Amino acid sequence: MQDRDALLVIDVQNDFCAGGALAVPEGDSVVPVLNRCIERFKAANLPIFATRDWHPEKTIHFTTGGGEWPPHCIQETRGAEFHPDLKLSEDVVIISCGSRSDEQGYSGFEGRDHQGVNLSNLLGDRGVDRLFVGGLATDYCVKFTVLDALKQGFKVVLIADAIRGVDLKPGDSERAIEAMILAGAERKTGLPDFSS
Ligand code: VGL
Image (cartoon, rainbow, N blue to C red; front, side, top):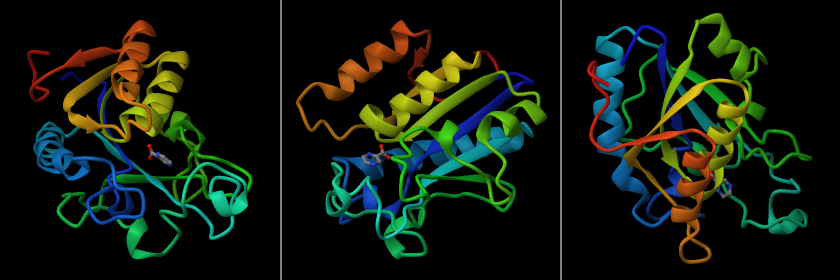
């Protein structure tokens, strides 16, 4: 970890965890790993961002609106809340994605904070140039967010133990990881520290 690093936690929400509307296999297992990452970034006074899927009831993202997914992460519902054990503090910047009915919202870079500022501007304002990324799901929001980050010139470190995928087709997550690495992401096992 260095001065211009930030932690980006992707969609660790009830609906993507055990018992949720779109539960990712072993989704909950990212929580303790991410909590330790959060502690480290806080201790180092480095910024932390957390994306959330934040859909309206009717959207092209859901099967009910012609899309691919069962309804999940509907604004202001329990399914859209962050996992109760995830230790996000007040100063974590929350980025809401897919909040319009005509967008899918897979990438955190399409999301905005509560004032409508997009993720790239927020990162730019804080002088961030490298993102440590973990969360759900490897083969969707993590992948699209990481690929967008790399396209926009950010460096990316994937926290291998802090991501889990949907794997609608077996191997989707592995292929997503390969695509992210091919695009320039670095994959790290273990927790981020100042030697990395
Ligand atoms: C996601 C499937 C559908 C994700 C969102 O957060 O990765 N996956 N919508």
